[in-house]
Length: 271
Ligand code: DGL
Image 1 (cartoon, helix red, strand yellow):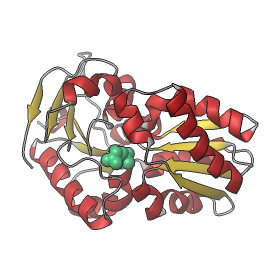
Image 2 (cartoon, rainbow, N blue to C red; image 1 turned 60 degrees about the horizontal axis):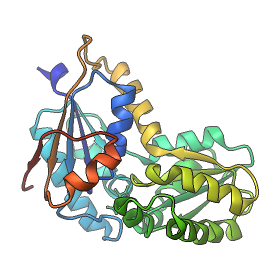
Image 3 (cartoon, rainbow, N blue to C red; image 1 turned 90 degrees about the horizontal axis):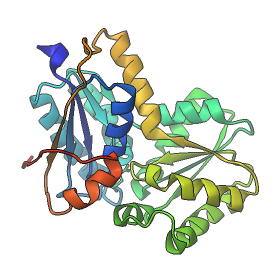
Image 4 (cartoon, rainbow, N blue to C red; image 1 turned 90 degrees about the vertical axis):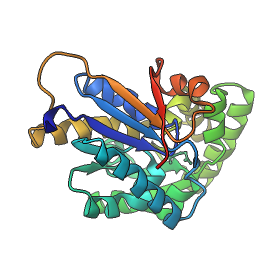
């Protein structure tokens, strides 16, 4: 029955497990079905058309599993495919951009917001658009940080190499927008780099910068939306996680770092 169906979450690869982690903390009773399109990762450097096509296939896979909601964990997929998915799918579809934008608008005092993400997410202009829709007086400066994704997957989270790369990216952002007081982590992988990014941001900007984690913001919105629709799962039992990937070469090695625990059974599928 629909109530027991669970929440479907998809991402270009392992990064979306940070969203699964946030959802598990916020909604421990919900069953989760995760699909990582690991055979075709990264989405961040691909065209809007390709990302939208892959996203449709991933979302369809989840719908066919009977989920009650689809969470587009991937910021790039949210940037390029959310509208189409919402128009096409017969269930609630939640993306990363709006929740992150909302949290950033609530947090800024200076009215200057920085956004970091993949090339695709930044090129799409989705965060500046979503923030302007909430408050057109705010200034948004976005910077693509493509090297942060492989760093997070490699587990180089806080060493001198990661520090040098973060300083360069955030330094360029600071040169453009020195009064930024809120930085949106607009990519599934960045929560792993949060301690480093927080320290480097303070160093580079010369003042505290509030980091907004779009994964946490999404979990809050998922909770509110399920409650509003009367779709929260009843009972006390802890929900299970089922994981599907399109390629399983590195999932055991990398996945647990993003989820914060072992993934359990993983099924390889073709979309
Ligand atoms: N999941 C992607 C995102 O949040 C990052 C990895 C990729 O480029 O596919 O934008």
